[in-house]
Length: 349
Image 1 (tube, rainbow, N blue to C red):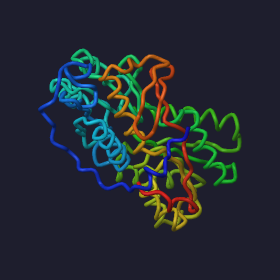
Image 2 (tube, helix red, strand yellow):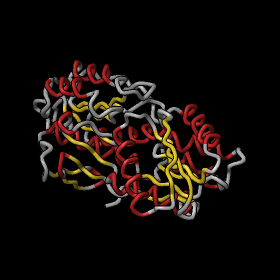
Image 3 (cartoon, helix red, strand yellow):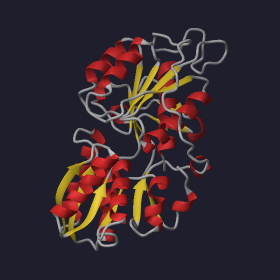
């Protein structure tokens, strides 16, 4: 199943208002459906409260996933909030997890900046009755109830390697511009990309991996440094939406435009001008709006007691249909999609 549904993707991606005020009424300390409710805030019961905690605020990717989450929470009659740090770092999310637990939030949906550093805080929240759903970037499995995976790590890694190989003639030096050095998903993809390169692309050499910490300026500067340090560089893979946009911005006005290929994971609205001006040929992603939408419905199903997170559990996710829980409490959205000049105009997010 593929994560893009044009009926949703073409609706547009209006900017999400950051810092929606917490709805204090309707918060319950328990992890099950609020007393007298049906898990959807109907029938006179208290509304299920769902808080989204992205890696950092002000990130267009997470703006889009939170937009989907908000739509889902509104669809099942719950109360939505988005909170988070301005910078993505391993411990920057801890205080927000603790606050959510103290406020009795029913479901916390989080993209983790570190697989292990958040576990103590998440365990405290779970003990207080909050259901924990990770999305985009997972924690250690024992620290949460469900992980909503955008696509398999193997599929994401292979898609990016295939794209760069095609763009540089399957030979030459490449580098990776990642997010933070601790990001669970980034590190998993990078290791799998290395395996894919070694197994199927012997003439491509990975010469460097650098980290922009999902900060636009740092990613821009790291791109410049890569090109200065590796004069024979033929391509860059950036498996992060902030990084690929910053790298494209640098390349678009540099002498390297058209000479150094760039691919990775990005959103159409970020990358459109760079595809149209020839800086970037093709890149990949799933629909982050669908990812947030699915994560919110997963939280609702946990809170309502419809599922426990065990393998084989199934639940309905609104417009996206039915999903099944796989091994290690993982729910798969779908496969990555390749954007290029022929199709990028069909999407708006």
